[in-house]
Length: 137
Image (tube, rainbow, N blue to C red; front, top):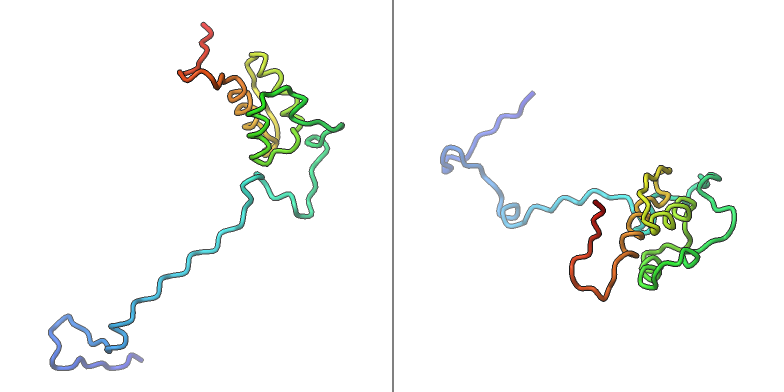
């Protein structure tokens, strides 16, 4: 059952009565929705109970230095949190640095984007301040 409400006689049509304490207090801002915490250095959370499968683990130790990349690229990889190359990186980076066209297929989060970025950055001549592009016709 709805409660009966009568507006005070001194209000114009369309106005409502608000107490002084409610009129002076600003409405509280809604709290932002919590977002999941995500590391900027990894594509996936690997800290849980799931382990990496054998196809993304290296059979022998390797490092980016073994790929003979330029010093600025090695420093950039280290600064970005890359410690060791993944199997797809070990196979694809040398081929791309030789100038071969690549189609790389691997699981999500295994470093495919890093392959193409590393090849492109390693091919830059930092002393050349003009646009650098090689067109193969």
